[in-house]
Image (tube, rainbow, N blue to C red):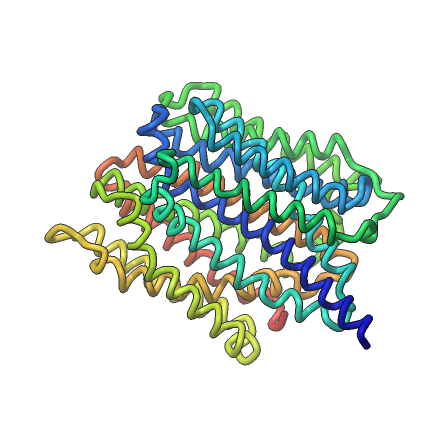
Amino acid sequence: MTVELSSLRHAWLVLAVVFIADVMDVVDSTIANLAGPSIRADLGGSDTTLQWVLSAYTTAFAIGLITSGRLGDLVGRRRLFLLGLAGFTLASLACGLAPGVGFLVAARVVQGLCGSVMIPQGFALVKVVFPPDRLRQALIPFGPVMGLATVAGPILAGWLLHLDLFGGQWRSIFLINVPLGAAALLMAWFLLPYHAGEDPAARLDLPGVALLTAASALLIVPLVQGRELGWPAWTYAMLAGSAVALALFVVSERRSAHPVITPSLFGKRGFVVGLLIVAGFFAALSGFQLAFNLLLQLGLHWTPLHTGLTLIPWALGSATAVALAGAVLVRRLGRTTLHLGLGTAVAGLLALWWIVAHPGAAPTSWSFAPALLVIGFGTGLVFVPLFDFVLGDATAQEVGTGSGLLNAVQQFSGALGVAALGTVFFAAAAHGAELVIGLAAALFLITLPLVGLLPKRA
């Protein structure tokens, strides 16, 4: 009994290390959202600078994430987790010390790639250290913690920018990862198991990886740069090239003996529909976050701290919904929880659109608070059960690849949302924010009927 308790205690410590790594990743994918104007004011650059600081990380993360799970089988999950965590920490230091915009964007790419190496190994490590009957209990906090970390990122950024630690302005939002990463690395070195179900027979489909990487880059680059450069012919050529590369990737996957993505997943209606829901939801959410932060800082000239504090109702709404969904709603309502969440978020976005479109007197944080509270509550209801429902009919052999692909789609669609809706924001000038908010509401509405095609129970 003592040995069992000691083993279980060790398992929870491993989970804590994985949680620290995951929270660092999620916060870093959102924290620069609020710091963008401060970064541009310090380092210079154009409107696209803000989009690249965000998209460089999420795109690199998404591209690497799909293949890193299989790399763990080949190289060893403990080794890759330690390597990814060390690289992520050093890349965060490089971001914090960046002398210019180009260096910062390059460091963000490295940070995203290291994050993609680290994150997929965590779930496999947790599966090894927990007994099967305790694994589901151990993973219950994952959705709520990640959801709240997503919302907390901009608030944390506002607070750090206000403190201006060591006179570093925006740099502290990256430098804070250095002590956190070092502590997690020390814990991981002593706690992580040496073997985590690696598969020596696994192989990496290099042509598939190359085609998927090319398709992603050919899509993101013109979306970010096109508006500023006047949409020259090469931007349209790259968009067409992205479609060709994606089609070639599909052909390559069908012929590959070791495909990047488990083919049987695409025979499951719930999973395919779930990919569309995840893509629409996170593209809308990321694009909306960017536009609203820029509206408050560039449009209303609020400080980062003022902007961060304005987002607190959103965080409170999310926290309340996460607790309610996890404790009661998902068990009683099933996938109706997702309908309720998306519908509530749409109502909140429409209310916010009205406030932005008809400002009247100078708006205050209190003007936005009710709408942000409703948006936070709606998105919080979605955060908790979404991935469980999408993977509801996946087999045990498909869950690992499916989880990696869902995370990759989440990150890539977030980057796509920043690129596309960010372009709309800057192109529409005075009406950019209200247009992006309306588009985000439309994307949520489009995903609503798709929820009915998911399994009724996770």
